[in-house]
Amino acid sequence: MKKVLCLISVWLIAPVSIWAADDDILGVWNTAEGRSQVEVYHCADRYCGRITWLKEPQYPQDDDQGMGGKPKVDRENPDPALRKQPLLGLQILRDFRYDGDKWHDGTIYDPKEGKTYKCKITMGEDGKLHVRGYIGISLFGRTTEWTR
Image (tube, rainbow, N blue to C red; front, side, top):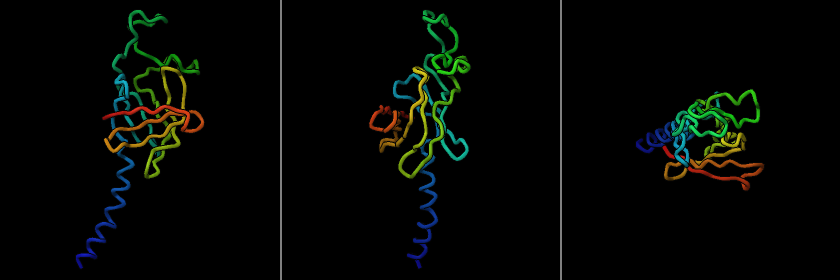
């Protein structure tokens, strides 16, 4: 009887544990350089992320584009209509799905360059996020680590 109860417990708890693992990505993460924080959240049945903190939220006084002291905006965006949107609150992670091993099929936007890349994210054993942005195939990309 104890074996049966044990098996039933494992059968009931295991799906919850597996389901919870996909949500390990949720929360606020420090980017590799420590210049910003990104909050990862649910967006419908996917995962997305937005900038929630900037180490330097304003342009320096000697800004070469004359925006010294003003809040940073997405001025490198290829769409001129979007260049005035603030970096704080800007969605940079879009449409990630979890497959039991990694979050994939999403994109990451780099506001410093105004470019969007394919992206996959894995959770390291050390609890860090390994965020890999790439062009075409994952071989041609760069990985950074984000921490809680």
